[in-house]
Image 1 (cartoon, rainbow, N blue to C red):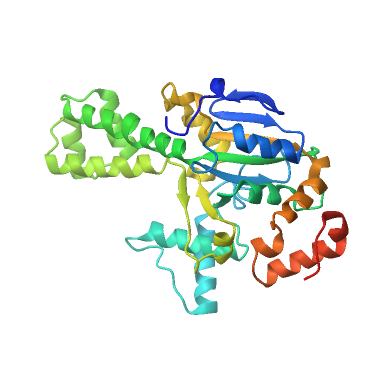
Image 2 (image 1 turned 60 degrees about the vertical axis):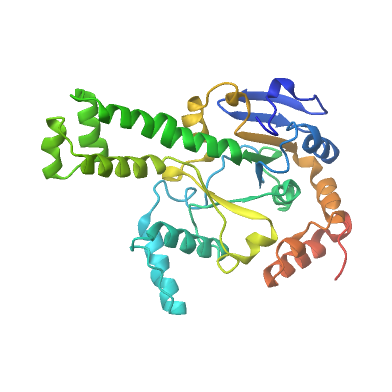
Length: 333
């Protein structure tokens, strides 16, 4: 449990532990100073290396992708339309139907994310204060009066992904595959969940499967299980230059579900004592702290100009300077 401390062993501080349920920890923090203290001791030493961070303007919002907010499905037609539009504008065609289609799709989604496309990708950063900035940057008040910063433990997420595909996936599958005759439930699972060609169906029904077919079934089952994982992706500078300025990475969930839904669905697969380490920590901060937070972050050189070193960032910085510059301590360039 390197660099990980169960909740019961962590030091108290100037915050309120609201709840811990199904792998999700919720904490209320009153001030910018308390947030700083929380980063020092609130995670038991795991802050620097095992967490990805995200800020959101309203504490009541779930962590969902921009595509999920407008479409309940993954909407594959959307990525194909964007592919055609990109090809028309740039003469560059992404081969999203070839043998490496998953990699090409991610590259195309990441490119679209950079240019404002609705995508299944969710932005995260390795820097907690950058996430805090994004939680409070928008001047429009949240409807609930509170904003939120999230910390996702990617080491524990990777362990849970392994449990999904191996411990509770391939290990029992291979064990059942080696024991004949197959149970009715296992036959049904192979035929209906994995799906097999007609020439293999009879082998399954008679529990007489060759080694080559067993290997084929294992490959297909692994790919099916892999689609249940929460995945991380870091695009190249060419795909998304801004994300590197922010120490960013992208997360995508199976079926485009909220991150919280994925965690609640699979958290039961985590054995003790690992289940006492939060997969996700939600830090709730009052709206009234906005100006103090942004002023403090600007002193740390965290603002639109440093996070978006391009023309768009320059425009956003100047707009904030125009409307709130004196209150937030921003300086003219």
